[in-house]
Length: 251
Image 1: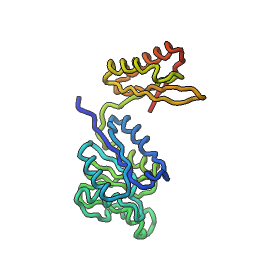
Image 2: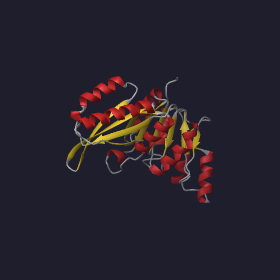
Image 3: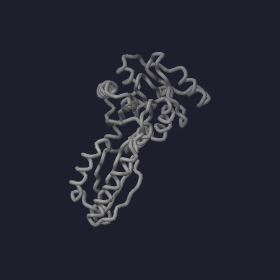
Image 4: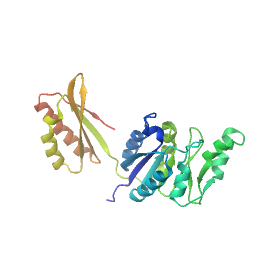
């Protein structure tokens, strides 16, 4: 069996790092990549600094099967992602003829210079547009890099447009079991389970509910039967500690 393809998400924007805007794209991309059998291995939040964007992009595109970027392809002065991607690939920035055609058709007239900025891509015949069914201005693909908008609704529409073209693998499934048990009380049992179920990722996540210490155990794997076995064993341990476990399906 060939190894599953891997991916990295680059979240670009000072507004994310400042806390002004809360990112919602990582959750969506993580869930969709798991469904497609793509292992999202890393996500980085980086500022609107050209040198940082170029260096990070070049590093990540050499490490992973796919790199997805979100943010920085709008009409304003601080939307610099396209220029940085072009620099990373040693290309010039052009107004993509098909992107211009789509914008003209959408607006019914020649858009102003700011809006035409959203038609910019690196040059080269290998650059492909990424459809945007929400606000028409497209993203683009160059090499293994997919450049998408930062607005979640648009980013999600763009990802769904490219999803059928991505090479996937076995989908990753995930279930959880939780109860009002302290994770320290079941740590030894979890360590033993992880040693026995090496192809299952077992995560322990403490939380508070009604003033009580609780723990949620999440199992992720391509093997549904193995997940079920882990969940049953964890539930048995929780009951032995005098707690009532609740099971469910986790993203």
